[in-house]
Length: 233
Image (cartoon, rainbow, N blue to C red; front, top):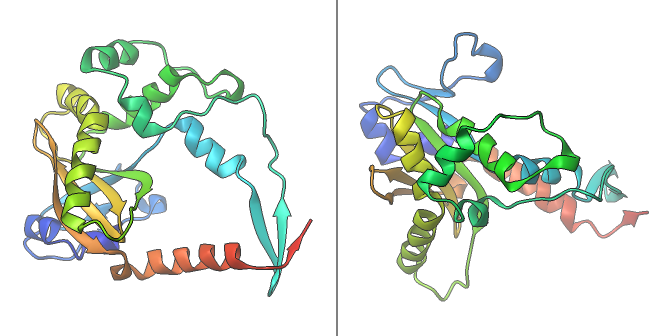
């Protein structure tokens, strides 16, 4: 994310043109932000439900490279009995008053056998209260048929994101009114940054994914793994 931030005119204007430095978690002993310049600092938060993140990590079929050209397909450790909620459709269900009521409920320790939509929302609300300038990263990739103009795709995506997350960001404003809120989402080959202006989410900058060597390296590794033809079962 820091690589994309350093190619963004939006964020470089906030840092007076100074490049941002990534601060690893291991060095954040005093609650530092993830991405820092002398003039401006940003923290990164994944915008995803606990159940969906857990499922991606533990329940998806995994493939492990045993040797060049040889892949093993691994059966997930846990595959049944868990209710998984997807972030965008889930957050559309709730207005600001609903979120305030859920926030007042008691937080419980994560239990894969007792996941509920409300417990997933509660986890997102806790992240929304982060008292820093925050860029939330929507974990879904958005892509369409290439015949659609990019501007049209952005307009449609912006409307959709407002339906999903306006109540959440209004909730954040109730608790954290003096910090900035951004939303990052991958749309049609671009890392797109939007800003919450207190009323709506608006796209402000679009960075080609090729600008991040780290992203390209990770994506290339994943693509290579899933393109292998030889599977051991």
